[in-house]
Length: 386
Ligand SMILES: Cc1ncc(COP(=O)(O)O)c(C=O)c1O
Image (tube, rainbow, N blue to C red):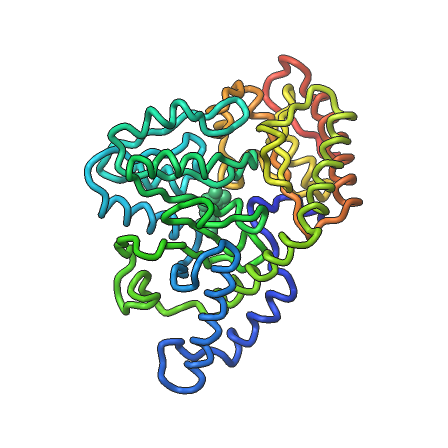
């Protein structure tokens, strides 16, 4: 399989797994215990905290481990909701459903701010939305298009009005450098499985001094900010993955992955007619390619690509199987028919240049085949797999 769906999830790297395994075998002691085995589990958790803090320029005590990115987001937004005064919550229209579904369930107005055709937060609409707002949540980079949002500018405008800001950085972390001090955010969500760590472990940055209300109450773990016995192996894996991501970002890793994405896209654009790259190409995550083909249904393409051994997604992984075009593309003004022909490719350091070019070739063949059977006005998609 050519795995080109790194925005959905990434594989655990062997060196990450090696660090995790002892904590699944003999290192089972509860990190809150008082004996030697418990103390070494505690030390492993604290090392992971330092490593995750290092990925985003935070202090270790500002990191709270959670059960996933979704939990981090919900914890942050529920805490802001509980402690902020009256007023609206301001989010971008292209947030992940973890943010959108959470704010819909708060007893306050939600203002969804428009994005421009390039998939980037509209500064005028955003500034207007801040009037009478209580807090803000803006993602660092979009999971579908990869477009990097003007987060620092958004934080500055919010802070000038005394509004706290959460950022969903689940998709950006490990793909581009992030520094919470430079960004000025109050809360920031991360998920290990997006940067070659295990699934089911996340982290929330909580700025030192910020008032905070826990979502999960109980035994008081994580300095009372997230109760529940720590997932030692998962947390160790997240720490190892964060350390790996720091190396990846500081060495030539990003450029290598960007070169694969660019070669893939160059081949697709030169060999397939009518393709559009969605999102501001100059401000994208270096690994992401979001393409629409027109006259070619994404669901059909996914089947043909799967048969050819290429894994990618239509829109976002969460949207696959749903017939509606994604809210992200609609917010960017992409017509519904075109949006339904979109695919997202996400490359990572497990890929090779040769794989990227083979994926482009498989895509070309899939589009040609589908267009042959599905010409204009042909009606429902029929995919011949022979
Ligand atoms: C931008 C964004 N936020 C949040 C999430 C949810 O993260 P998790 O799968 O760890 O709950 C995802 C995962 O797809 C994401 O891409």
